[in-house]
Length: 262
Length: 378
Image (cartoon, rainbow over all chains, first blue to last red; front, side):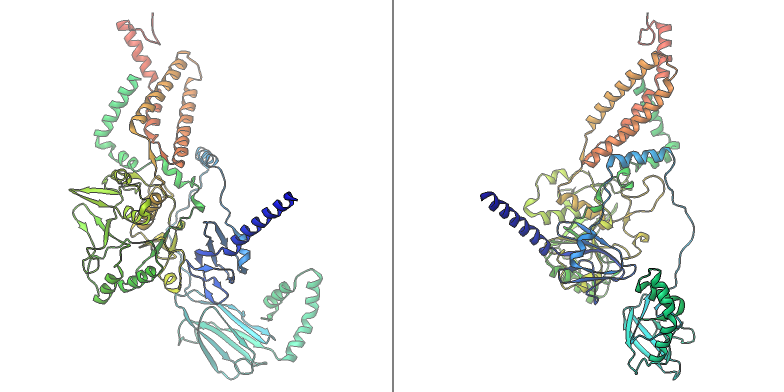
């Protein structure tokens, strides 16, 4: 009887200790690259806290290194949405090769002349400091009730201008914003079914529209959409038969047939 | 052994006094085998994070912005704030006044520099005499270009000056500060480096200003200084120094570590009581004599047997000795003990190479004076 009681007591204490460790622990941002965000809205800053109620939103090329109170590091590199409880799975793997092994490997590499030497070249790299349009790609047709426009801002400016031109009426809509995306509904006001548009983003409020790169977007009516979907059904069935997932099929059809859902 | 030491002494005397050898002397002046420890990442410092120290980058901020930054940081209640910046001239009066106000407080340490000709301080309109000032020089040895050592205190006439890292550590440790460290730090001591910029939490201006609360700052040490551009700091050279952490430990290279990071390493060493113990010179001399004697005894015995493999054995053992001695030195360094093996290796390796000449000398002495030795005797 005493043994059973003692084992339960030990279990209870263990549960209490581990439980309090999990719930009491916060993560602090030690390093970051890109624009990872908490709860999709608040940009993560170094030194900031990531607590139990938060979710972490990581985009392409984002990087976060968290540290907890006891100095453990957690490294996140992939674009995804992470819950607080998932962070423990990303504990940074540290090199655990022994000191002596590392030293003698180094000596052996020196003797056998295996040490890699960096090639030296007298050159500088320059990339275009512009706004790269990401999605929707050019000449896309869509029947989706909403369209998410996204781009990659490689300029130093935070405030950008989104341009949407109705090709029929030639009306140009301009929206000033910060961030890398905007979601517009097909609301018969800004976006109307059956119309073709051009869209672009610039860091200048009054850019030369003739020089600005625009992507074309065709918003389909319900009838046009259903007709196109019928045409695509054979391809969709074939891809399904080959074992592709729904998301993969959508991506292929969007890229190759320019028929996208957003 | 006496013969080899005599030859060694003559050779080193010649090399020291001939200006022809100066380039070689200069090339090896800042070289240490132990730099291999950091350069080849033999240390296990990758996951070593000291949360007691937070670095804040002032980059190219205006004085009014630095003032805002300090005020925001002070609101987080850090234990100590160290400002590794010298404001040498007046600028705009509003910014200067804001900065002077932000520097008021008992937990602030400000910096000055001792050059060969003068002491460079911030202007009195910004830094008041009440501010705790400390010198930012790492070492006062004019011969060395690598920030390898650190002098924590400096006697200047009757007054005792304190180093930036020492002043901050003392303020942070409070009662835990050990009084005997003052005498210990009056001499230059090796810095126990724990990491570069990546091993510390580095906050940029926007990080500090965007956050309402920064829990990692409370009760910790905050060091403000120049850490280059957030994304391109590898290419910024201002206030960058050569340290043993340079990835290229032999040959030409660019300075590798910001001054603020060197200070952070010094502070880390002091507050964690992680000093490097240096093996005394008398022990090095003793060990060199013992090892040279053993090596000479073995190789003289081997030479007398006139083995065909003598030269091969000599070279293999000499090489193995060097590799093992460096390994032992690195192993000890990892445990916080600095054993300088370069001289020891050079003396032993050079001495065993002189056995052939010693044999010739012994032969000559035997023929002329009937001098009995191990090689030639009646």
